[in-house]
Amino acid sequence: MPRQPWNPGGSDSGSGVRQVGAHRFDDPAGEVGFEAFLVEGDDGVLRHVPMTYRGAPLEGAEEFPLGTTEHSVLGRRWVYDACGGPVGVTAMIRCALGRQDQAE
Image (cartoon, rainbow, N blue to C red; front, side):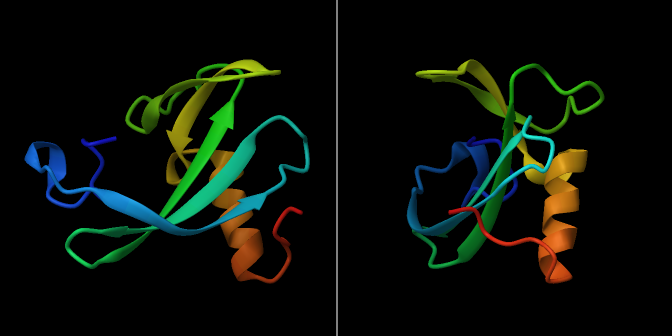
């Protein structure tokens, strides 16, 4: 994640971020997870960091991967900047229009 544009100072920075909030949306198709974090950098800037995670790499999203993770039940998940995939973008649009509630 140090290469991401929202990282304070970029890849050469020793700056950290701390989570100050989060929210999650459900994918109507039940295939892709969506979580977003509010993080504050050592520079005092608050950032919104939306991510999606899925059971296979997202074709055509080569510039948006954040990494992989292992889920205890679902196995390997591919994690992406949510702005680079259709499920993430659609969820954020639905939220802005008042048509997407936060998941329980």
